[in-house]
Length: 415
Image (tube, rainbow, N blue to C red; front, side, top):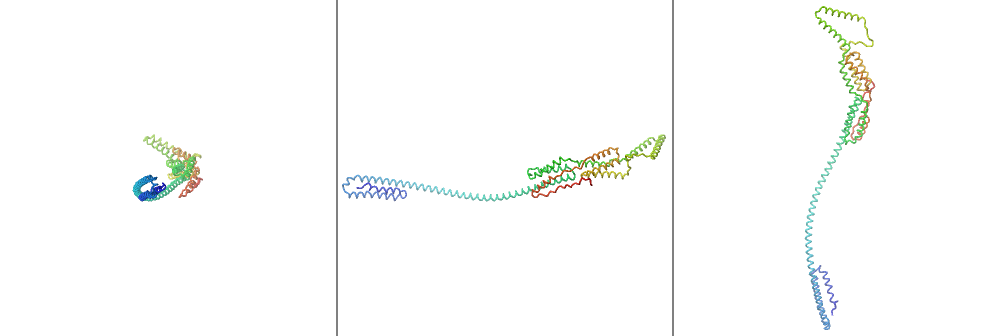
């Protein structure tokens, strides 16, 4: 009698074939069918050898075994069928995915090729941009150098102009004493330094402002006005009448008047005799007066001068006025006053003191003599010191000459 353990082994190969069906579907199915078919045959041979007694008791067993085998074969066949379907689907899916992958790979390759071309184009453009950037940087460096050079040259020009204005102001103060012209020059220089980009020149501007305030507060002498008044006096000297010229003019006027009266008398014998008597009396009186002469010792009589001497007198007065003008410009107060006093003395001695022009000229000279011209002119030491300091900082700055304190003649009264 065959036990269930004898019919059980076929399940092992069936399970093994079932596990291997996905790997090799055709060979596993054929081996499983052969094994199942051989097992009933072996059971039948052993059953014939065992005898009839056992056949009775085991008549149902073959049927059960056959049914089990049939079910196993059906299950195995169904499994094989499903395995083949699954394998087919897998193969189709794999083929489909491979095809899709090939298309994707082709697209990726095309995209990669396109990207490579784009990268190559970008690299070429980047190289061109790098060359342009390098060229632009070179131009920027050149422009920066030019700008720095221009800034330095502009600062140098401005500094030179300011230095020239300061020197002009110093000359006006020391030589001419013209504080107005010095103020104009210094204020122009200060205005040039007021630009915002000239911040490095602010110490110089501060010194200029201080000197400008000092000049404004300094007592000023109107040198130009005084020189103009002396020039007007020079022009009026030729028009001043001499004292003896006035006496001669009066005598000539009296003689002309007498002649006019004599002519008016005409042929009147009595009038002519009367005029003759008057003339004779005048001549006699002059002769008698000449014997006795009275003079005032406190005032000299008008001096009689020849025409050439009159010209020399006027020229000498002009020379004194000119030397007074030069002394004014040189701040030589003693020479200035002495020349004016000498010119005024000559006018009072030789010119007609009753004339209005002479009176006005004498009054002007006396007024000019009272003007103090010896005033110490302010110096620009602070400005020159600041200018030297700024030029020492600025590259290429020129040397600033020191302000010459002896530029103007010393006002010690010497000529």
